[in-house]
Length: 291
Image 1 (cartoon, rainbow, N blue to C red):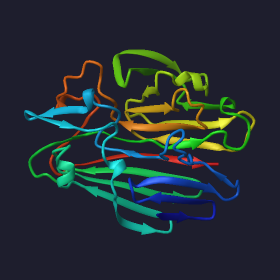
Image 2 (cartoon, rainbow, N blue to C red; image 1 turned 60 degrees about the horizontal axis):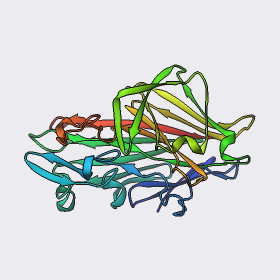
Image 3 (cartoon, rainbow, N blue to C red; image 1 turned 135 degrees about the horizontal axis):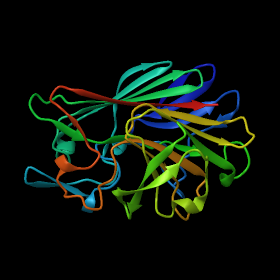
Image 4 (cartoon, rainbow, N blue to C red; image 1 turned 180 degrees about the vertical axis):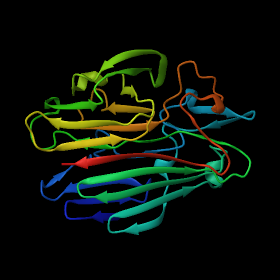
């Protein structure tokens, strides 16, 4: 377990999955990151790579071969190497190996970087393609979950507001698969009041189109909350498990999305995938301000 600390926050990160497991605000004496109670959901803030969401039949095709991969990919279940570590900075790294080639036949270097500044935690995903000739196809995303209620009230007392305030496309899920061809409007002029019953069809997904956006999680007339700024993501998911009355909400920046309802299975044609030329590096970033 790696600990980052300054005068405002204590942050803990598990090498397994490079997963954020705690963000403790010293002055407020509050824990913001979901405790990971397996009764509801046993994770805290997994990093999703090399897919986000589910593949049709949990499989994809590439160069005439079929590969099998579970929802959200394998990175969240693997131990990362600690490449850099200081009092307020850490870099974790996962690289391809014989075990990853069996489910994902690409060379890659996946770094998760944490920087602590005041009450804000900056997160960065760097995906590098070390191959000298072949392109790298992938998705990546965050899945941080936050305790609710945070400091009083009940789940439904909290809301999520979005800036810029405009009408976003909402991508609906049909079972575990996305249906981007039939979006519905999401009016961000009105804050989203959190209600458990809104997640019976899984996550609420907004299309961000790689435009910077800020999401404020708070309770009316209350001083504590979390503000997430997403720099360049394609999508953002809001999720709590249906039918469990779980005391948390996940706010998830994604550079990729689940297979579409009409996916062909060809990984090079997968909707939302990123493509890196040989030798290139991708960067996706977001921050969380715990106030």
